[in-house]
Image 1 (tube, rainbow, N blue to C red):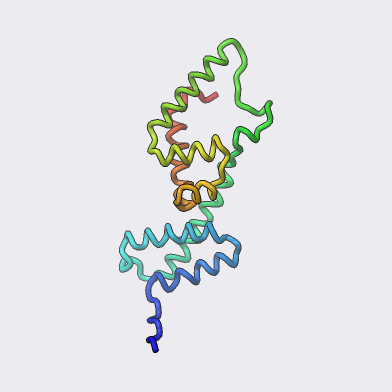
Image 2: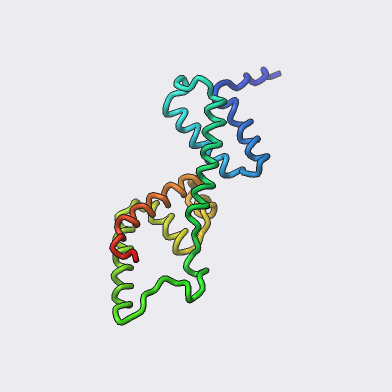
Length: 166
């Protein structure tokens, strides 16, 4: 006969109950990503640095889920292939083709300055229309990491392509 399992202590004891609570609220993937981020911060800081791991994890996960929803609300994205023909960004006039070629070249150069994973996330999401969930599964990373790579790519491209902004 085997001995009963020892009770879990520390942050791990609270992990499952918090994930279960968020799952009941219907936010399964977002809560798991937020929980992983919170646990990572907890372990990096040293579990002794946090006096109440349950309260820390509960607040961190809540903040993480809120941040994810704010991020999704602030940056609505529509793939180019889903836009109507009259909604495509384009300029008219004799220099339109040259301007488009210059912008495409600058975009390619700016993307080339990013790490490969950021390039892949950007291309799959913005150009191919993949969702963050699809990208996360295909690349074997969390949805939170997809969002971080996308944010990094967008910030970099915003800085590099300012001269092309209207």
